[in-house]
Image 1 (cartoon, one colour):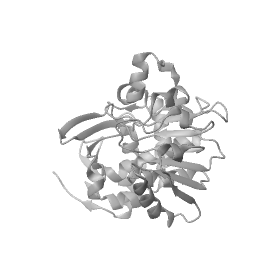
Image 2: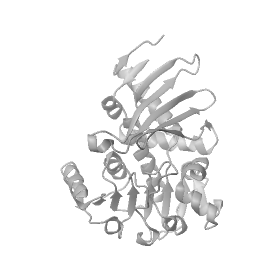
Image 3: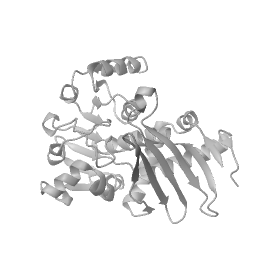
Length: 326
């Protein structure tokens, strides 16, 4: 078994490659070529959880499980709020073949999924990016959005103006050709923005439908379990709505669950899974002034496909540590 650190995962999985891998994978998901049980989470005390995401790609071609600790207080300690291990297995023998940093893999593949959706749904002339959140996903989403659109301005909103300003200071030197600003509020950040990414651990909505400009595209990313909610129901009702995986959206997206239960929207308000858009089975955005939303819950198929690439590259390049557990 090869063991790969967070640093090695990051170096072996460049964002443009991850975007293409995720796009191909989500086509397979929407074509029914995967086995994806819903994410299961258990309480481990102190408001923390352990998430378990098993899955299989193809007919016995690749399978594995991601074990991810969800610790909201970790960023204050200099750690990712999503931290754990991804384990892959040999489909011929069942032997574990690789274990790698799940936090690095999750950070890259989640942003890559948003980028692939943005490439398919955002207006081609989208230039102004607003990000609500100042954690690891904010950083990877900047790289991802810049990989698929000619971003010229980035606005950051955090839980406080000071956090937003500190994040801007850390990013500005890395991308001197882009105008960065720290917004005083989430509403100020998204006003007139072409692309909006919500990447927080907020328990209550941080984005409302009447804040969003016509023609904008939204990647709603941070809330992956039904006890948290980043976007208000009005965001759904005023948009053309796409999801990564319908079963996850119906079971784990709080705002979708509530909108369906109240009758505010029907299941067919979700126009398509994003894989159907990638495959050309759905046209995606209907018109330039439509608001499009990609509601991302995250699926194990993305971890498996990206993990397999990292394992293969790591083996080819002699990276990581080899361990025997037999």
